[in-house]
Length: 304
Image: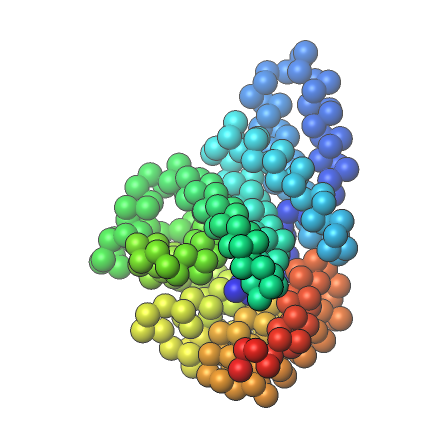
C-alpha cells in the first residue's frame, strides 16, 4: 500500500548530528542527572531534520542505527510524544519501503522468501503501532477503550500534539492489517484503524502535506462498505494539497482506484504522473514511490 511513506518527516535525518548528541550526553553524565540527559537526547532525536537523504541505499543502511537508538531512548522516556511519533513513523516507513516492497517483488519467484519478509514487515508495523498507541494511552488514559466505543460521542478527542501519533498509529495499523488478510480477527480491526485516521483528518485534513488525506483514501477503498468514488476524492485532495509534487497519492490512487476498477489506462497514467512528481521534488519518499511506480508499470500485464 502506497500510504505509508510519508511526504515529509521520517527516519532518515542528520545521523551525524544524532551521534554527536549521544557522545555529548555521555560526556555530561558526570555532572547531570541521567533522566535529564536521556530526555534531552530524546528531544534532539525527535526534532532532527528528517527525510534529507535521497539515496535509497544509503538511507536503508543508516536507518537501522537511528531506529534502534531512538527506540531505546523511547523506552526510557515513554511519555515523549514527539519521539514516539518519530519511532512509529520510522518503523512504519522501514517496513513499507525496505521489507514489504521487497516481499512483493520476490513473490513471483521465491514464495518462501516473500513470506518471511512479509512476516517481518508485519512485526515492524505492529511494533510501530504499539509504540504510537502506548504514547496516546499515556497522554490520554482510556484512549483505546474510547476508540472502540460504538457511539461517536464517546470517541477520544485528539489534541494537536497527538495528531502525528494518531496518524502513524492508524497507518501502521493499516499496514499490519493489509499483510494479515488471512487472520479474520486482525482484519476485523480495519474499521477501527479507519476511525482513528478519521479523527486525525477531522483535526487537520491537510496534515503531512496531503499524506493524511491519502491515508484516508486508502482506508476508504479498503474498508467494508467503503466507496471508491469517495476514496478518489481523498486522493485528489492529497494531490492538490501537495501541489502535485508528492508521488505517493498518485501511486495510491493508481492501486486503490484504477487497478481496483480494472482501468489500466488510468492506472498507467497515474503512475507516470507519480514519476513526474518525483522529478519535481527529489526526496526519499518520492524516490521510494518512483521505484514502486516503475515496478508497477513493468508488471502491469500481470496486474490486469
